[in-house]
Image (tube, rainbow, N blue to C red; front, side):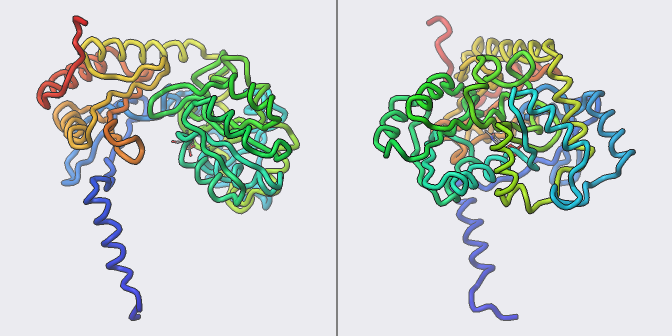
Length: 411
Ligand SMILES: Cc1ncc(COP(=O)(O)O)c(C=O)c1O
């Protein structure tokens, strides 16, 4: 059929724009080896294969291959088959979903939890639904909030105010400028994944108390890893009771898939009843829910794994600093090395992969501001001393090869 619009040319234009801006994304084809993570096999575009070590994954604790998680998933799939076969409302609620929600509510000390197919959907569906529940709601959103929160806030048709990243004074200014009677919600994160910095949770809760606002926190890069039971930074700092809605993922430290909110029973009931992103989609496969529940339950007790994770991050930062490389260190588990331009970042990443078998994806604009292009390493308890040595040697050699600046180690 003849189109009046040249759709093909428009697709070319859209794709060419990305190529011209150096923002076209190519995916690296990797296959993890069960029981041997972070080792994996890279299948190159020409079909040949090379062993690699993954240094940029979000399976932060290696739970994706933990025997407890694997066993729970095998048992569930053998018991009930592959998919759930329905939305939560229409035949897709199983004992596995209910158990996982109970596990998550307990994790955060909340009355209830509500599962979504990802934390992206949990953020988007919840934030876009809240103005239906609270007409006139104004959402105050941190400038560096994740795309899923931005999307939820943008689509919700309600009012939004963006406060400068972690800037409490600016947030106060914005709160003061609005009608004291308007319903308000402050949305922010506990660990910002690009710089690895922490949100000022208690100060934000103080402002929320002062202005009668609800609080919404994304703990995606903290659940499983912080707090004595893995309840995130809000658990570590004993602040969970001051947060109205906690968002988390089951796909990163818990090593499986899915997302959720934890909140009061009434809040979860209302979101469950009004959010299209919850209602009109097939629920998670039971085996996924079973694996996630096993992971959450396990990490409530495995402080040792959390300690090893933090130790690995400290060692890597120390060693990179020892080379004089410009890392960002906010005391979290995320290790960003700032390269400062997209070309060198890509050269480093390409050579690390091809010459050293080290896989770390370059991170460019618009994910991070221009001039702060970086390599972002995610050390885990399953990265041993050999892997660490190889990474340090590779970075040292390539940093010199690219003639990039180092800090003055004598200074
Ligand atoms: C801060 C933040 N929130 C939400 C998400 C989405 O999590 P999920 O992968 O479960 O959709 C991400 C994922 O990268 C994230 O970084």
